[in-house]
Amino acid sequence: MQVSRGVLRNLSMLTILMLLCSCERRDIGSQRKAEEPKSFAFHGTPTSAITFMSTQMNPVEEAGKMRDVILKDFPGKVDFRPNDNSHMLSQIDAMLKADPSKSILLGANHGDLISLYEKGSLRPMDAIYAGLRGREFSPSLIALSRLDGKAMYYVPWTQASYVMVANRKALAYLPKGADLNALSYDQLRLWAKDIFDKTGMKALGFPAGKNGLMHRFFQGYLYPSFTASTLLKFRSAEARGMWTFFKGLWAYAHPGSLAYSTMAEPLLTGDIWIAWDHVARLMKAFEEKPSEFVAFPAPIGPKGRGFMAIIAGVCIPTGKADAANAALLIDYLTQPVIQARTLDATGFLPVVTLGKDTAIPGYLKGLKSAVDAQTNDGKSVPTLAPQGLGEKGTDYNGIFMLTFSEIVLDDSDVATVLNANAAELQSVLDGANARCWLPDVSEKRPCKIE
Image 1 (cartoon, rainbow, N blue to C red):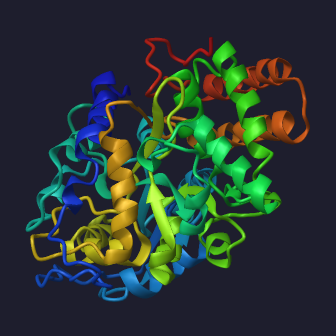
Image 2: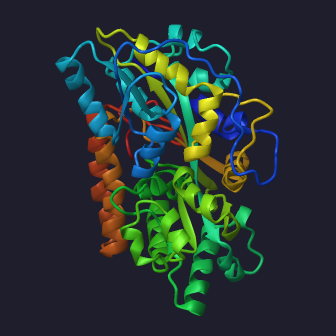
Image 3: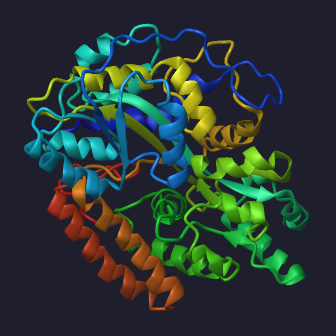
């Protein structure tokens, strides 16, 4: 099976033109909660418990809100099991082998769903999608789910991205003439340096802890901004300059960054004044102290503003089990009332039209504006999450973090590290026989690092 390049390009257009279009709603100022759409209907009752395996809503707080808030009105039992992609991908077959009749729903990002599709592990979803009446999906999202260019293999579930946040105290130290919506990486370094020089505080923070998403910063933000690539230019001259720059930037990063999994808490405690993270993991700071923080788009590098959009879907694995129970949960999760509830509870953005009477909560508006700014900027370099790596996705992410550790923390020679780790990355790509993904485009399979 092959994923067409046209489908991959659809996501590039999606991220530039249509991300968040389903979230544009009537502004009602600083309203705390989004108004839930009034229409809600159960279309059946499950005949057995459903196991919902997901790579999304993985942090403890998000998982708790999924169980206690988002799923609370579902008329059946759901065993929600969030975990990383390698664990989920390895467990599906074993679970179905132990109980072929088990009702299973899978939730994962677009790249992981491609891996499942290429293994032949996903059922076509067109019939289930046809039954999802009373809601409007973006046509580009639906096109993206047609992994063979024809049949749908997942139903869109959520969308999200990553942005920067600053405590308003930090704004007094911005470099002269700097604009948060057009900040360069050089200006970010000067900003953090000025705070350190004048206060002694290392105010910059990243989620580089065990369960943090720092690897996405390198893959979707730093590399594309400095090299216009996430893979092909991994060991290029531009990449060497990028890592040298980041070593200088890290000198002003709070030491706690190596333990942070999410940035909301250190922002709230005041340990960090400037941070980067996933919008869902920043939401708590705005929810608790909305007047203290400002969100802004990722900085701009020599090649533009790299950013990553995350599209997640829900799907049903192949097997003998009746898909009707899982289909009921898909119906529930994609109803406008539940999509609005998901936005309000977790910050993950809807994939269906919510209706003119639904408002974005006031504390989320700043995060949304920051995503809009990087999505719609003509200087942006949209980047996909890793595609087609399957169970090797964890190894892939680990190599970026190893590169960071060796170059930035251990002060190893940049070129030597990049050459060695490029070979490791190539081994992962070869083992998965993975294509390149945007911003890299190549006819070769597997993708070949230059």
